[in-house]
Length: 346
Image (cartoon, rainbow, N blue to C red):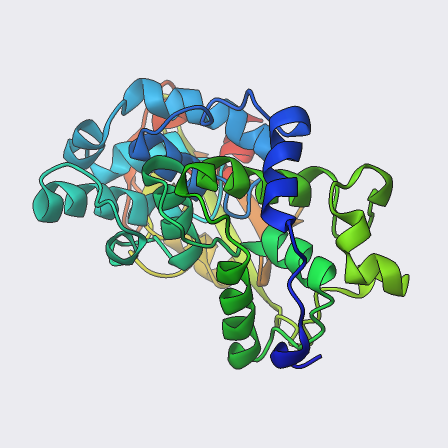
């Protein structure tokens, strides 16, 4: 349906605000605050990550980095170590860069407008709007995956969101739906998030408890799961990685820091090789190779087929690749990719 033919449901924002007050989520640790640092941190953590997972990481991160000043001053390795297991590590690197820019460009205070927030590393349009709406009551629309689903269903917006012009049109509609009163922005923004996370789900809808079901075009059509429309599929790739699990007689493990770009960028990892021959040649002093059962580690765009080989040897004979011997009680506090951490923890 062309944007010009989309009619905006009257009273939508008021209905959403009232529903959130009575039925929305109220006790998440990043709610009920206007601290932009906490809101920003939660928004970044929640990208591509379930709330239940973030509930574990959020307080630990705040315990180590309670404000933007301490985060900006920390070594990147410390940030990555605390992020270890959350995945999508570019978020952590951008988080660190963003904190440093808040200090250098804005004197340690997050800017008040979404337009300025969006100039910071790792903060896109929707995240900037969320921070500005929650903390500064700016009338700025968010449009993350959950909100796209809610709005396309309510509006019956069937244009293909794989086309940038159609997504821009949805942004315009989202802005037009905002409450007139700036004071309603935090609760309205939370309402959209809550509805998409708990009621208007990707493969299941609970129209009976939805506060705007009588306004919903998708429900009237009897096809709520047909929205949103996005035809372009992500192209998946795969890679075979051979992992050298070198352990010396002191129980130390050989770890190398990954390059700043590519898989597991900036993290500490077992050395990675393209082939079994390359791996074995890297540590000729290693003895008794033990071939661990391979497994597949699934990333968003790529499948990693991991082939670990454990070998033992004397500490004076290091593998012929970049890295260092790390004590058994030290590596758990380092930034490691999730599959490497699981492997070493045995």
